[in-house]
Each structure stands twice: as structure tokens, then as C-alpha cells.
Image 1 (spheres, rainbow, N blue to C red):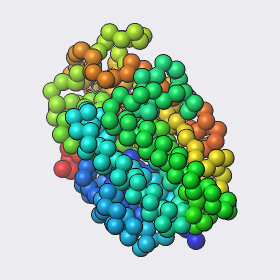
Image 2 (spheres, protein in one colour; image 1 turned 90 degrees about the vertical axis):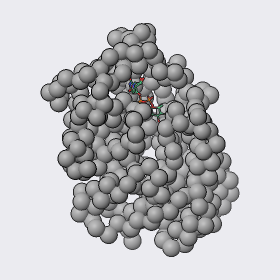
Image 3 (cartoon, rainbow, N blue to C red; image 1 turned 30 degrees about the vertical axis):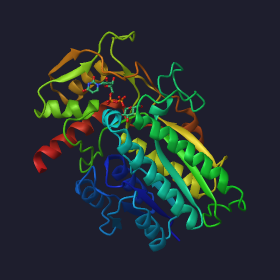
Length: 355
Ligand code: UFG
């Protein structure tokens, strides 16, 4: 029987790319989303890309305990990938209660329903933000987690810890058979993403920022298309080779494939520990200036940009050591930053023509 994967937040940016890759890999996928930060554009795109018109979609809020319980009663769920969370760093600083309430409640409800329905394999969408102001570069999974620099980052740290504890508590049941998820046991993987960027090569799904984008690449593409006048590069006086910050930009389709590899590891009984953590990045630091120049070159255009003061809260440099994911998941980032930036631009143009 095909395994079914619940993707909470599956209509969003990363969730929609993951849904495509799961369907392509032969899984039954169930998408749940409350549409609080997206519309049906990406879910419609997922159906077009996969050619599957009948992917089940449930419009529920994972903070609604009863709705999550009902979801688990209505469908046999073998694994959950939990994306449903708020993700704007600045907003989380201004509205911490909103972030703690939403991001913790939704995950707790997923875990509780997993338990009451006989156990499950749970993949948590975490972030490199859990490393805080790290000075160990590149960061490995064993690099210490420094205090979070925002409530958003803190929710990622707390949710990782909750998953670790829940997995530990459930291990008192009988050991899990190969891939079985019905003996009360909960197994967990946290994927720590670096900076996801880009869009599907079909240009049918991509990032849909609400209002002024916080993140670099949507700001670049919106500037290039004329929605924004000028990109501000936040700080060119960092002690880095060109003075701008260094990040590890991971292509969203590569990132999605890492989820498929992690889900397969859980469902095929290949985990070495009941709770595992993997960095998902390329291992290559790229500066903001380099990214802007690469965008201009690959897309043959000139971007209007200026250097402005540093953005409060930014870390100077962070990039991954992805070797654990490379070895254990058999996964490696494949797309070049140029290909990814071309896909981001194609998506922005698709939006301009279709919305
Ligand atoms: N930047 C600019 N101008 C902009 C936007 C960003 O110069 O208009 C710069 C930032 O200063 C930073 C780099 O581009 O140096 C990347 O910034 P993003 O906002 O795109 O990404 P961050 O690295 O700040 O944040 C990302 C995710 C968070 C996550 C964090 C930590 O968006 O969810 O990585 O790993 F928490």
C-alpha cells in the first residue's frame, strides 16, 4: 500500500515544492493549510506540475486541536511534514505572543494527534536560525545552538526540543518494526534549512510574499520587475571579503528533495536514532553582493541597488556543513545558484503575466 504523507502548510512556498516531489516519488499526499499566508495559486500549480487533480486538500488551522484530531481520524497518516508556522523574523519581535501561540500550538496538536492515533513519523521544518550568532563555520549539527535572536527563532528551537522529548517518551513502547508507525512510537527528524530561494523550473509555483518582502531574493525580483524602486543591501562594512553578509542559499527544489529523502528514511526504517537532525544547505557561502551580481548576469539585466546601514539582528555569516545529510540521506544540493536565480526571475515574470 502506498504510504501517505500529511503536509501541514502544504499550500505555501516550501510546502508546495515538497508536495510536488512527494507525489513524483510515488507517495500519497494530503495537504492541510489554513491559507493564512498564501492563496490557492501554488496548490493549483502543484496539480498542474504533477498532473494529479485529486490531491486531497483540507483547509484547516493546525491550532484547532479538534480539526487536527479529525484529520488523523479521517485519513491513515504514515508521516507528517510540519510546515504550518509563521516565519517573519521582524514580525515575531513585534508580536511574540502571536508567534509562540501559533507555532507551538500547531506543532503540539500535530504531535498529540500523532500519539492518539498510534504513533507517526514526524518531520519538522526547522531553520539554521537555531544556531543563533554562531562563530563555528561552517556549522555542523553538533555546533552549539546559541540563544535565538528572535521569538521566531526561539519557536524553532523550542519545537525541536519538544519533538526530541516526545520521541524519547514514545520510545518506551515496543521497538518499531521496519517502517511501521502504528505501535505508539513517534520518530522525528528536524531539517535545519539555510536560506531557501528560487522556484520550480516550470515557474508554476514559487514564493508569494505578502506586502514588502523581508527576504533578499523576492526583494531582488520585485525590484527587477519594477514593483520596488531600489534594493537596499544591508551593510557593506562587515569583515567579510566584500563587506556584505555571507549566506548559504539553497534551491527550493533541492530542499524539497531533501524532505523526500528524509521521509523515505523514516518510512523505510533506516533511521539510526529515533530523533535525527540534518543541516540542509549547499556548504557554499555566497555574499549579498555576489548574489546580486549573479542575478544580473544570469538574467541579463541591471538591478537598481544601494548600500544602506546594517539590518539589526543580522548575523554576519552562516553556512552549512551539509556532509551529514549528504552521507545519511544520500542527498546533495544540485542546482547552481545561477539556475536558481533564473528560476526566481521566471517565477516573478510568471506572476506579472498571470495575476
Ligand atoms: N538583505 C539585504 N536586503 C534586503 C533583504 C536582505 O541586503 O532587502 C540581506 C540580509 O541583510 C542578509 C541576506 O540578505 O545578509 C539574507 O537575508 P534574508 O532576509 O533573505 O535571510 P536571513 O538570512 O536574514 O534569514 C533567513 C530566513 C529566516 C531564518 C534565517 C536564519 O529568512 O527564516 O535565515 O537562518 F531564520
